[in-house]
Length: 309
Image (cartoon, rainbow, N blue to C red; front, side):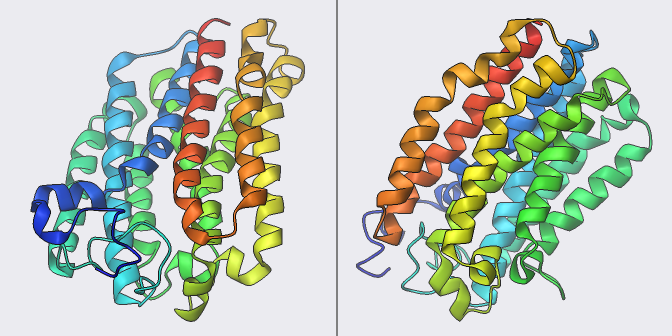
């Protein structure tokens, strides 16, 4: 491990394979998997159809699918040369030599198998169509940095995140409980997807230079850092103002649906202030956790508002 990376994680000899897999799973990104499930369950509750078992199954599916995606990305970026020694981000398991590509691939398969096991129970609640949703989700996880057309390397990472962490995860979590897609679910799904995209944007702004050298044409590489920061602000604006659409666009009378607008200004303001001040790419690492935490805060606040509506 280079001197630059030391201090972010222990030296290789100081931890076990299991801890290496824990780091490779990128636990700080997992709120992006659980937030849409919480929101989808809250949408089902708002129409009087919340069911605990499918909600838990959806949560487990999302969690294992996210871990599989993170492991696949760890291996895929290493193979394609995106994880270089001067990378500013958190150390990666494959590139750091903690795990071999074969071990990470095995971990990906196990995670996908666990996701499939949990997701299979959703067929009982959502019908055979859930098989298609599960297969597409698994293929998208693998295709993010692997295969003949890796999505992240062709500027489609943001689209992937908005679709699968927003529309698919939120809407279908609601569907397996309520048996329908309430019109307002799409507003919440969009807000959640854009919030998850902000996690990706911070990651890609941080890695812009090394991604460009490796041929990873993220939207940040394609359109520049200033464009990415404008998109970041837009995404947060949609998250912040989406409760107004619920309140006035869909006639939700309970003022509790506006709860995110009370809780989000301080963390969003702090994040935007920090974003303006950052000079060293490594400073994006703690900001990444704060952005993920803000998405989770939005999900909790909006869900409470819907549960009480």
